[in-house]
Structures are given as C-alpha cells and as structure tokens.
Image (cartoon, rainbow, N blue to C red):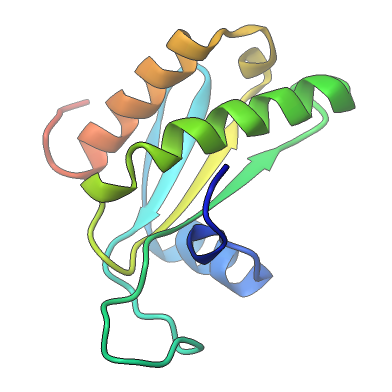
Length: 123
C-alpha cells in the first residue's frame, strides 16, 4: 500500500504534473514527473514528500483489471519513491496493454521511464 502522505489526490496536482512535468512513454505506460515542486498545502520544516497518482482508463480493461493494474503500479512506485527528488509529483498513466501485462513487465517499463526522466537514459 502506498502511504497516505505519498498519494496524489487533487485534480490540480494531477494537472500540474501532466502539463508542467516531463514525460516518458513506454509500451505499457506513460510517466509524468514534475521534479521538486513544493506543496502549498503542506506545513512544517521537513522537505515535502514525493506524491504519486495513477490514471487507468476503461481502455485498459474492465473494473477488476483496472483495479489490479492500479494495485501493481502502487506497489511498484512505493519501492521507488526514494529515487525521486523530494516534493516531486508523479503521474503514471496505464496504456491499454497494461491490463494484459504481468508485474515484471510493468516494473521494467516503469524503471525505464523513471531512468529516462531522472537523466539516466536516452530515447
């Protein structure tokens, strides 16, 4: 389960990540990343947490399939939060093939997209 502090919930935050962030697409998913943004709703001295959200449309499959894809992606992103700069906004959009993919395939695509966004990979 993704901790509550690391969840992207507001529509404005999704829009910010998608419109202002960088994008890396793969066969099964597209990752949008806005690095180091600050949360205007957060208080305190500690750095803001990385927040992630997921978009899984009906094109991926029926409700059971979409829920399964979201759970897999949540689990995968939870293990990769430490790789991202504090305050980052991440939106992972599943593409239609994600419904038929297994955990390992989603992990490979997510890792490749994050590597590219963080400056470690080329097109």
